[in-house]
Amino acid sequence: MRSDQTRLLFTDAFGLSHGKTVQSARANDPTHYALTVMVQGLDLQFIEVPGYSTDVGFPDMEARLDPGTLRPAWGGAGEVGMCSLTHADGRPLPLCLRTRLREHVARWRDLGLDPQIGVEMEFYLLAGPTVADGPLPVPAHRVYGTGYGADPSGLLDAIVQAAQDSELDLEGCNAEFDPGQVEAAISYRDALGAADAAFLFRELVHDLALEHGVGATFMARPFADSIGNGMHLNLSASASDGHNVFHDPDDADGLSQSCRWAIAGLLEHHGALTALFAPTVNSYKRLHPGLLSGYWANWGLDNRLTSVRVPGQRGPATRIEHRTPDGTSSAHLAVLAMLAAALDGIERELAPPAPATGDAESDPGTAVHTPHSLVDALDLLEKDSVLTEALGPDLTTTFLGLKRREIEAWDRTVTDWETSTYGRVY
Image (cartoon, rainbow, N blue to C red; front, side, top):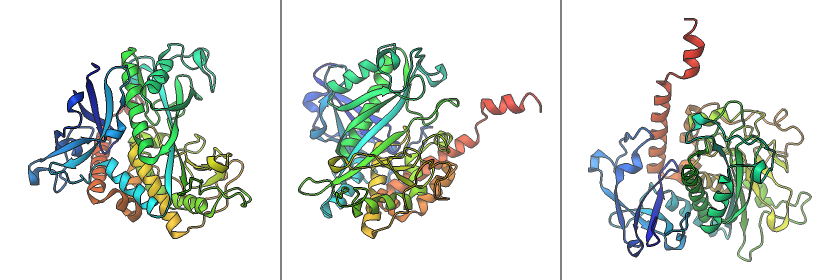
């Protein structure tokens, strides 16, 4: 991309990127798209959403640049910026994830709280352009490996450098449990900025992998013999004077009442949250006990075997980590959902159960867990008034409709496992 060009991006309901490259001098001009883009599924078929589809002739929308999001584009040429979506007359578009998230952050701020988010993203580097090529071989692999212990190809170093050049502010990057898998931690910031950064980082990783002639995947469970990809969300909140309201130095565990209420809210909505945290059919191959994936509706103090974990740091670093979200979730929707559930706990002053200790997957302290299928998760989401109110009726209808169509396509698909298992004997 030339240095006088700007890449304008926006996110759809699935967290996938769309946009347009324009001359930088025109970056602040409204850019027009047919609204059908926002009501298309992965199969590129639209669904009828009143007010957006055939009933109104597929009207235009506008993707308007948020100037504060402009940053150097990866690759060292031009800039990249995030757009929010509006109707052609400038009214906010109810399907815009950035607008929905911004509105919910305002609800926290009305209570004198400023939510802060840190995102940890896991992904596999691949041996070729597609998942079918398998993970990148790493002969010297080790957990928390760097250099040749993480990626002998040099691609990971290029990703880290590009993220730095694009001001995404990574805290660190390292090898994860299986060869080819890595984790990148994106620095804490305001909730909308964190979702934007995670969205852009995933785009950056895919672009650089393909430039290197290979690929990368954030799929929840791309390989049956390996662990899955999480997108762990860390939440804290600061008061107007800047102090972390989740910390209480006089509490035996260092946690404030607000922190405990927020934890209880997350557990209260555990099943319905899964639809937004684990939004693909493949996601439910990751959500099983023993995979450290956030299966049970439990919480713990510095216990990675729980779904909602409070890491050991206290004071300004006191935070809640949710381990259920996977790499296919929309960062904007996942952050929005976490804020909505946690705020519900705070507003209702919900009391959490006792923290789980020890092997919290074998003895979770609860019988509640994530749904076993996307079908069940969507049903729970549809019945959850707190989360559907956070999404709004238009986005709820669109998300549920597109995901249910995706499930119908999966149900009609004949897999390799079926043909190899049944075809040889029947």
